[in-house]
Image (cartoon, rainbow, N blue to C red):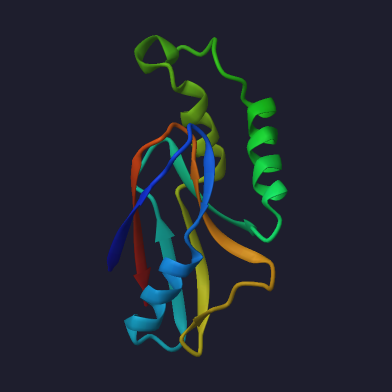
Length: 130
């Protein structure tokens, strides 16, 4: 198991982590298996989606904002980030990607993305390849 850090720059953002994960898969020595990508944070998530067009990421963040608006949640009385917790729960903290021939089996337009929902922060990404 390996890990790396990502410093996010915005309150809500999607950061492409495909390159870092690809390097860890390459150096793992695993030819065929599964790569688990996980973030140990309650207000961040990992998703797989397109990153070739930056509008896709912004559309996803906009849709989440409409689905779970800021304010009015009970948890906001503690640290004013309840919407981030709810969005992270919907998206989930991990993704599993098949590995074949020592490479991630992502589709042509797919990227692994860290979704920041309460930044900017330093985030840890844990990668396990088996």
